[in-house]
Amino acid sequence: MNEHSRKTAQTDVPLEVPAKSSSASDQRPTLAQRLAAVTAASAERAEEDAEFQIPHPAVVGKTLIALADALGHDPARLASAQAELWGSYARLWRAYAAKLADGKGETVAEPAPDDRRFKDDAWTEVPAFDFLKQAYLLGARWLQGLPKLARDLDPAARRKAEFYLRLIADALAPTNFAATNPRVLRATAEQKGANLVRGLDQFLGDLEKGEGRLRISMTDPAAFRLGENIATTPGKIVFRNALMELIQYQPLTAEVARRPLLVVPPWINKYYVLDLQPKNSFLRYAVEQGQTLFVVSWVNPDESLARKSFDDYLREGPIAALDAIAKATGESEINLLGYCIGGTLAACTAAWLAAKKDRRLASLTLLTAMLDFTDAGELAVFIDEDQLARLDAHMDRKGYLDGHQMARVFNLMRDNDLIWSFVVNNYLLGREPPPFDILYWNADSTRMPAMMHKFYLRKMYLENKLIEPGALALDGVSLDLGRIGVPAYVLATREDHIAPWTSVYAATRLLSGPVRFALAASGHIAGVVNPPAANKYGYWLNAKTAKAPADWFAGATRHEGSWWTDWMQWLGGFGGGKLAARVPGQGGLKALGDAPGNYVRVRS
Image (cartoon, rainbow, N blue to C red; front, side):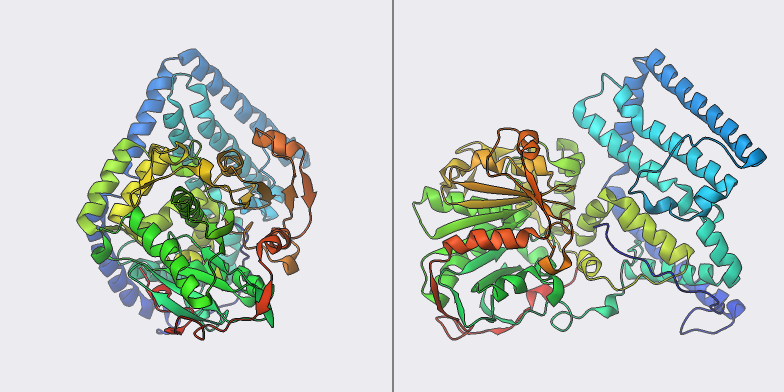
């Protein structure tokens, strides 16, 4: 989620904190009192975090000690790398001297093309800032290259070391500090420090919001209201149980496909990532194309649901939804779509039905869903016996995994975009983050029931049991993905840090039915939420399924626009004909209320 924009126009603002006294001196007692209060709250939170947090300092320390030990086994290799670093710094000093003398000098280190931290002209045009930028880049790249020098380091430990060293390097960037960021220095001079006063006010506000933990504001929370300007596609709740509400959407066409479409979103976040605003709503698009659409809206669980298992999510999720859809429409066959972990569950559902010789599925669509967890991407950094034991103990105490813990994991994966850019914008420049629907959704985190999450992380990520025929059973039924013979559309996104596209591609060999694999540009969210009208990103197709993902991509053809149109054309082959549009609540199930419903409104 790195496509958000920044507002830049905010200068000549008086030195005051909004809604308080206009005198800076009058603000000091209030700010001091707030600071004292959040300091006390932070101390209490620190005691909690000492028991469990992601990442845990003990895990990070253990990883870095293992790295240091492995580097010590080959001192000559390390010494050579150090000599190369000092040689690069010597070149940088010479280039800096030349630039001071005549304005010319070689560039020793350039930021990556997608590195937006150094876009300000001062980082190139002012010799001192140019020197600071390049010195940082040299050091950061050397630091992040250390795990590759450690030949004896275990591959899992190497991945962790690379991840943690990247976080350290990103945190030390000169852009993150007021004294070394030219934009902040200019704003401070122009506004006589008002930006820093506003920034302190916003910093304290975020600490207060997190009750002692820093919950960085990424967007204006007051800018969005569920059912009014976000998650607005009209529909009705037609079924409800302890784990989910089932939404049936109001038709937008006179005729619809006979077979309904059921969407199973992830429960790690809320469903409305697929229904943000009308212009980028995947759900609205499906309804506009003549689908009778049903969507699972998962509950945001608390300790009362601690014993809910992955079996329960299958039984009370898609299986219950299938039964409800049959009552609502009278149809015995449906098309099933799952996104992210919802896609993993959808595949489990398809395998479960296949094992029971239940032929209710006409097709299966999987969006950025992993079935083979051999390479689980950066999430694998947090999965091992030690960390899972800590997580289990934490969830046993609370009954669930806190929403802020899940949010922290995903934010760390894109720390420059989802942490440090907001530190600079909110606290150093003193600007409020602009309204942005995806980031509003991203901040609306959800909890994970203890029993379900233990099973999911251990059986899928750690043990990778789903790809072994018969090794995993749900609700008493052994699963075999190879028995899924219905046609499948599998979408991956090329820059996905949660479900690497090469791992998602494994579905082409695990499912026995015909598979159409599509690769969208961009990442886990933007690559999926890519409406045709935006004409962004594009996607790749290759009708031939190769054994290796690289071979598939080598023969693939790039298409402009959105994969939505290709998928909808594919789905049209499994619609089962047309009939008059169905109105929610007028079939076999009564309407229980308006979409988006009640479960989605529960905040962590």
